[in-house]
Length: 55
Image 1 (tube, rainbow, N blue to C red):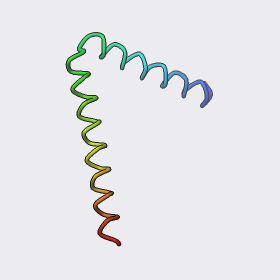
Image 2: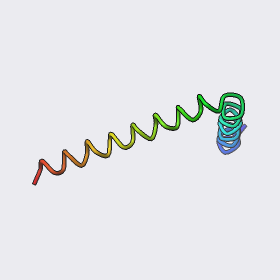
Image 3: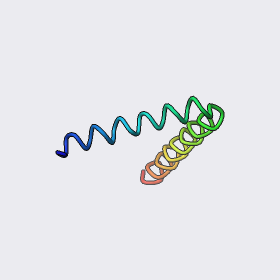
């Protein structure tokens, strides 16, 4: 198996697992997405505060 084939298998496996998780436990999947979004917002706010302190 070449590296390109392995990447395709891993990519499609991850997509399949995400789809299965979304369809079998939609409330848990929504909480996961919500938590990830909140984490990104928090990181963005922290970076904004850091750069504001530099000036």
